[in-house]
Image (cartoon, rainbow, N blue to C red; front, side, top):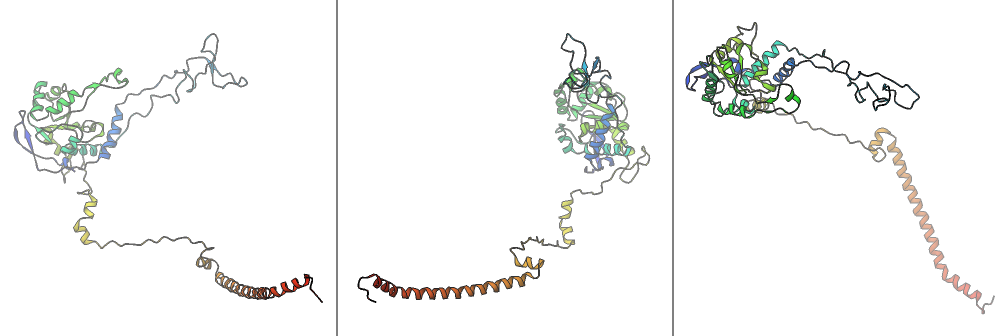
Length: 383
């Protein structure tokens, strides 16, 4: 939002300060880039010239399909013989020399209608942006030597000579801007060179006047300089390309007429029936700064810190608690299994003890058995 200042200096043709004038309320309007871009995009379409291909293009030959049975596509084919053209596909958009897909027509919806209130909103936003030096410089204008933004000049509407208009702009500090526009003139890339738009050039200052006594003809030959009547302000001139921040040179009459055209903060416009300036819903759009300010933080309760618990899915086959939730009998079954396992372990220990005792008795009797067997096979054995 533009900084609202009560007064703006007025300069004469030599660049000297001659007085002051009140800053119109339109320069405090909210700056909406989205509205400006939308309106500019649609209004720029209203200058287009309809174009279309010839209705006969691609069909200026006698071609018929060969039908089926010849192992070729059923696309129409040029008849005759004795030339490469005979037998070639025709008419289709995939064929050489055929028509394009969906041939263009001149009854396309070329123009766009934009609501009056949207157009006015875009104009007020562009005017407000033109009063902010940062936005003007960001758009590429060289205004380092300019006296003031917005720049108001008295007695400029009566200038009739281009050299006088050039001297006026240079006296106001816009010489670098004029030189930038003049040196930016270059050949256009593409086929536009053949269509009466051979050169491209940067946009320079926009001179807005209330009465055309000669100023329009005086500046029309200056590279990049445009003129506009204050009653017929156009977003295409105020924000070329949809980009806010054009450098504007106001005549004093045009500048003082803005209050009647767009009204004040509390008053309606006298030139536009029932029109009031748009107002921003927030005077300070930095919501994060407002919320984090000490005044707001002191009045609100502390933030409630909530702990979020994530539920971990457990495998019932491995977790007895999860299994009991699914099958309450699982605890008794597991207990019986444990008791059975203990009984089996006790029985096994008794069996092992008996087997070990038997094996020990057998090992103890082994020497006597060997001695007895040795006596049997000896020659000295007697019954």
